[in-house]
Length: 401
Image 1: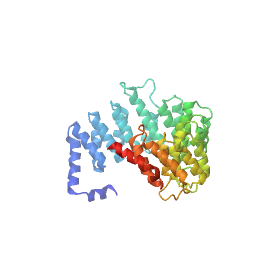
Image 2 (image 1 turned 60 degrees about the horizontal axis):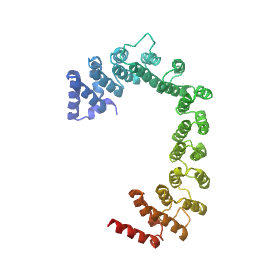
Image 3 (image 1 turned 180 degrees about the vertical axis):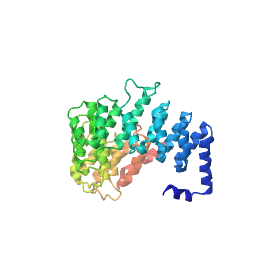
Image 4 (image 1 turned 45 degrees about the vertical axis):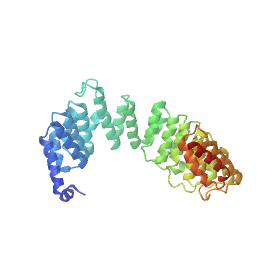
């Protein structure tokens, strides 16, 4: 809906409120101007643009900041005035707000030139008029680089390389690598072979910002990295991109020696779409190799993917039942639907084994009450549970009384 039609559809009360806010923006005190700008921001009122522009030269930096923020939201504002704020305002936060407000106008040649200047950082003999706080000018540079990395042009590649020559701070370097990955993915790949570990992590993260297939291929290679953080970056990126072609490679990470990598792989696999025809026996073979502390999450994966269990799988599951791990026991029972449709029929012996483990947990004073309650409710899935559970449950009720 365009601004003109939006105006026509507003009620008299709404129009009156907008007029009041704009009037306060023009004539109110500092607090009233700030609150008015914030309200106009939330309501996205285009008609306030001129009043917001006029406040860019207000003596209170908070007023300037709130008005610049609103102009950014509106993708509006007087470009020369915003550029003046970004270049010359004595308050660092106001300058950053002015620069951000110019982001919607990045395709304007003058604005792009400004962002290039800030991206290169300040020279040793130029404090940018900000003598009070190092972070102010650094944040301006980061803001400029972040904007340029999101609005990519081929010409930015040389600029980014020039900034890297300055040995930038880690956060700034990461943004530069992300921008380069969108322009020249081959450059990022070449650096992977010769970079220090911390830089390699940033480069691998940068791969996630490229939509080229070669980036996915190199993320796949990082699944075998000796650096757990790099492995997790690769797993998360491939799963976010729904790269199902690497499903089994991610599954292998479920049995990684690092517990955080295991969990990352388990959680990532659960987010993949289009995984309806998974080879269940192959997946279970990987799960059996995983460490015990990962097994509750892995069993959730079996349930989430609707894997059909065999008799052998069922025997393995029951062998995992352990009263010292109620979370694992609960997930085992979660795999048994009320109608037993997804698993072979439980034998009397198997039922008795599970019931006994559940009862042991229920009577264990060290187990949390919510875990006992959850497992008690699971007993209904075991038709023969009453043969041994009733005396125990009665004893527990007697103790409660």
